[in-house]
Length: 391
Image 1 (cartoon, rainbow, N blue to C red):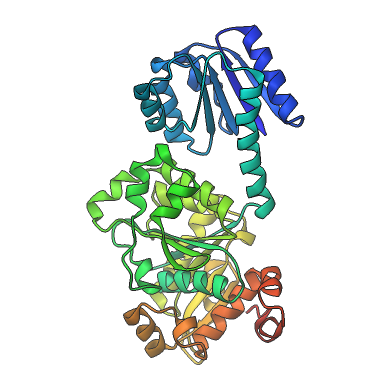
Image 2 (cartoon, rainbow, N blue to C red):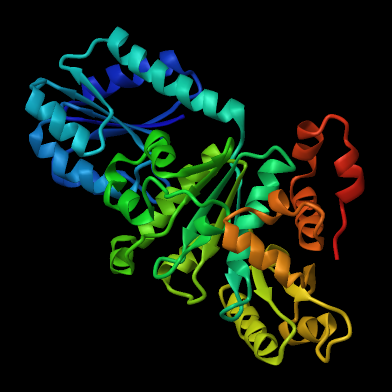
């Protein structure tokens, strides 16, 4: 655990440092004497897990709030002589979760640090960082949202994974409609406006639970709220989500704006979705060139051909030559089944499990999460039937 300690006196810094190391011998403790206006310079690009400010006053809260808006994942502990209800409310609004009355002794510090360490260890013991899977259309109408939402569902229903689906198409996103007919409790813009309070509980409360272990963070209902979401918000939300889910499936907008690029930069795998027509082939080449200019490694790119059918004028090989990238998967054309799934708001794997699209989605999920599938299905027969069918 990395701990940054900001104090007004060197002696006090050494006291807190000793208490922190006594509680966690592996803790990396740094910091020193500081002034309020110096706070931004103490937090580097990576940042600590825990920030301790001693003593803290009302003057400290503005720079702390600025920090929590940029880095809501940092746990902040204040030691303050002011424990009035007004100060505590201001601290909470600034994103602070722990306030100790000054002077805080070793026992009080160790107690709070113990709670923080326990929470982080429980999270680490439950799972490592999950994988971020980003879906992007090479051209409008490719079916990226359908594939992203239904693959997300297959990963949890068939493989036992804990999955978050995040709709980053802020203008006209509708990913939630592909998997549910329920109204989401909140959306991405509303979470962004409360970014200083962001933690696992807030994120969970904002998401629609489609089924146990499958949650969706919807895009804003009103496109006018799209500007409320900024790049640093996307970074914080994805960072938190990947710590709490096995897979974070992100449906991004087709335009390569700063929000899309932030999601693509953080993605473990990127899935461009293409169809076998000339406009799609042309745009797949443009997108592939853009990815190369961004220095995205080829192994992170997993191109998917949607609505595939044999015997067309343009083949998978044509797409691969144009994009300079092998096709990872081909999803067959089953228009009526897909349309019915969308109209009913029922994932195709659930509503039409024997359809060809459902079979391919299960196979893709098995390829992405083979170990989880073995744990989720003790009999193993689905893994044997659908596992490891790369195209």
